[in-house]
Picture (cartoon, rainbow over the protein chains, first blue to last red):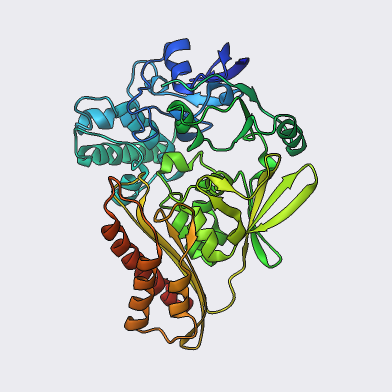
Length: 163
Length: 290
């Protein structure tokens, strides 16, 4: 058994903790850092509820050890709403009814944030492809796709309008 | 689910990784992308005493043509294959495969080397690399050596590398003119293993098939070539009857196990269909189509 000191940046904040090597990143985020917005769904690398961004890329935080994230920049769902204002993705899920029980939503939104950064103007097909690693048992996905389309349009309009 | 405890090492160079591996040979497991190993550890199907994490070895991430082959660094993420313009342009069989491995989140972390070294017949790259007649490059205390892919897979989760060797590169021969390839996979849902899948790489000489190699996914205990199916193609002009004969040969020579994805007869028949579809697309591509 080995303990390791890990320093990483999560949602803009630098944290240092000592972790056991076998601690999964998702457990570190939820239990050591008390950021419980990131969910554990299947525990088998199937559902994507635990998706976070690591250096901008969406990955399943149940399938990585916390010690591997030493030096990384991590974003979780808690980073999205700035100053009490919803991020366009959160607003899209609200406006388009992109959630029912809400369990998959943090993972869906973090996946969407990751692929919208690479492809800001996706087709419906590309959105469906982009979220194909995230399972939703309630919505049938149509409303989630609409929510992401809403967010993509809003983010593009904001970019076009300039700061 | 919590994995059993282990000692963790994160070497910063390949030499450091090799010396750790030599020191702990037999007890240590290499951690690449971890998308197969970590789930296995959570289920305690795998309980390595020591993990050597090679994710910091950025020198092992590249996809580029060098001389007569495409060189892929073992730690290249699957996502990078999807994005690679040279893969998209000249290696359609590899591109077909890259976009159907697991799901997009897993592909952001999973590595090409890990997929192959794991030697799981349910993984997609083994069939593709068998069809390409690829070469694995392993490095150990005695230096580098190359292993033809036909000799690489020695059993279920077993490969030809020694305990103190690390897979560092995969080489795919540059396809000759009039070559084409395709990968066709049937899966119940994105992220599941294939019910069956077929990788085909062939070269045409006029109307005739000059060379053909076929790899199959998840229908045998060890990643396999469909050699009887290949024999049905080589030297023949492509016709519906020839393609059907190759599909039937593959269905007969594969050795699937019944599971939640279907029974043996079903999987054999799906294999026939996957092989036929891959041949048809490979031929179309060899003639300059998409």
